Length: 189
Image 1: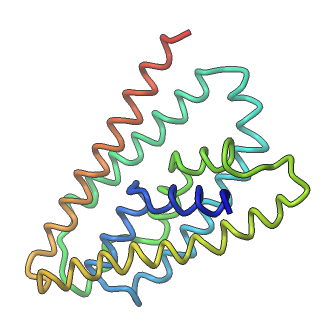
Image 2: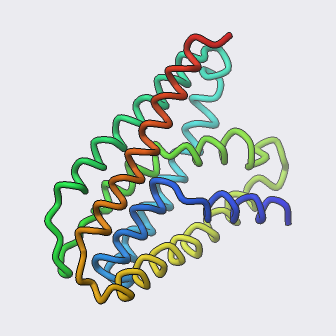
């Protein structure tokens, strides 16, 4: 029960992946945005496995690797924010591509939280924990799509650029936070 509560809380927290899901829901609707959920599942699954089995041992040895990963994620989010900001949106456009959501989710700090803190990899029931996470991802992701669609419908979609601009601003905030905390951690003991 605590595991599910932790996963739900983390997934419901606004972040780069959720921002993109909501933006897609607002700009093209829920049904056209559904393929993004596969990208979210693939991104989190891949990132969690890579972080746990490959990066965690390296990260324990060097804080510089953690900082480099945060800076890389921050730079990608900044790049994506600029692309979304510059996009010209119409109702029929698919502003968020599955590959963009996949890479954003791969670099999402939430994946590290799942891999290093939330998922008990030393448990004999780790498969069940992973399956529970995979079941919750599309449910909560659909909620973000629906929230975006509701917001898009609420404005009668008169201002599609506003959603892209808002998403860009949120991603720049996440990007700046990641980069600044990474830089600050380099000098810390």
